[in-house]
Image (cartoon, rainbow, N blue to C red; front, top):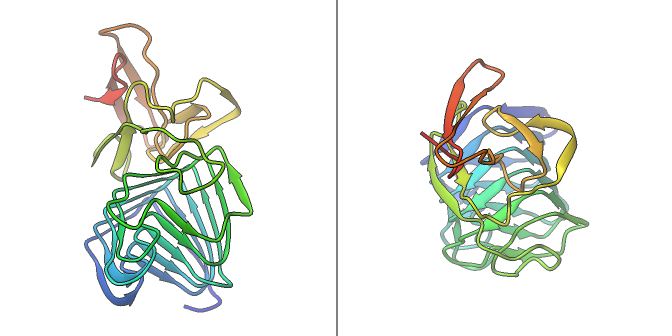
Length: 231
């Protein structure tokens, strides 16, 4: 709805198809997407999200979406639109023309975000962001972002209400810099370091140790500390 203020949270949008734009979401309003996963959506442009309004994406995973005849496999941000992406992971998206992960023609602020493993169209294309802070884009298509394989695991249940992609041990997205004020990742587990993406890595204490973490919903996660992955 044009002009409305809307929120999508703790949600999964998967396997949808649109003939024109926005397989998962077509936004004309002021929309916030948080702690959510968009996967396997398809449209001519903006396979995951087509944005013509004001869009904020936080602590979310956008994976395996496709723009079949145009731009922006994960997200297409149209001219005149405003997009802010933080603490999110975009991986395995594709576009026939450009911007397998994100194609930007509007205003973009992006921070602490992974855009990786785009099948076609490159990880990023279009107008450079106004804010580009602590991002990881392996193919070098976003000038100023770090380059390196994020070592993402498959989209799966790693705890929390939505599927995520875990960071493998040794990923350059893992940070040793503590946050001044800890917050929560997409799963609802505490994010104590400034890791890039929607998933906060649980650092190993010792080989064969098990880390137990409880999120705000009372869910208990068990993790092999030597690998940082869910068991």
